[in-house]
Image (cartoon, rainbow, N blue to C red; front, side, top):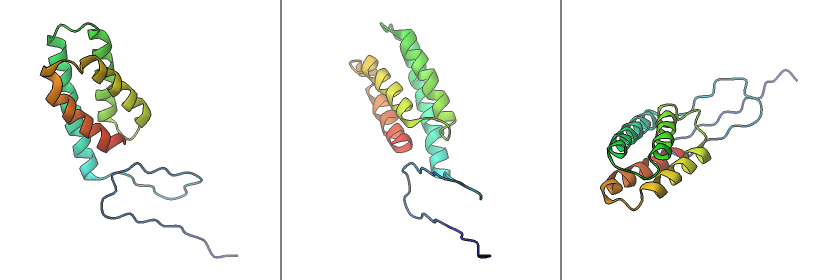
Length: 120
């Protein structure tokens, strides 16, 4: 009975998906990668650029767009605490409000790709 059971999991290769750990964790849990950090920083920069462009445009629901973009920027700056479903909901709302405007098409496509890679 003195033997201690140690469960170790090693994930190598491409592991871009979310990792859900349940139960009791009595050791060190390290999640993330340098690539994810760079992607989150890139996403934050893209969202800041979109917010700047949206602020200059005459949008119908500008305050809704700006509030959601502010929240998305905060999520991108702290992806480890962001809730993926909430991030996706916010982004869907922003895309819906900006979707018909061609000046945002390129940024929307880039941001959509980053959000998909980081938050599923």
